Length: 169
Image (cartoon, rainbow, N blue to C red; front, side, top):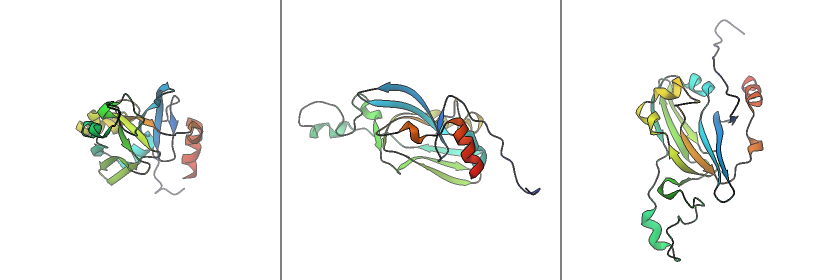
């Protein structure tokens, strides 16, 4: 290493799983009917690498009430989303669609959905106060709660595996 190499200080929390896209996943609930519920956010490593957050724009929830008239059986559940009880907050995001856009002092970073999922809840606090992502990425700086359509937890990294992955990149 040369004197010009920079070191990034970051932490990894033990009660989370991680992706190679630098997202953390915390399982909140497991339900056989509607699937697992995860709280997600960016890792401390990614926030440190990106720099100061200036703006956070999260995937917007859509109101699906207007589509109820197309439901032939007269029920008001969402059509084809699998988010039976999520109502308007069960916004479907397809794999590789934008989950969040982070504007930082170093530019713009887009977070794409690693799997198709339903956005159940957004953390509007990070849109109002983007610095929360820098100050507390594993706490108040979380981004959203999602229900993935198909997420194999075996594809996620343990804290030790994530640290090992970071050494490789």
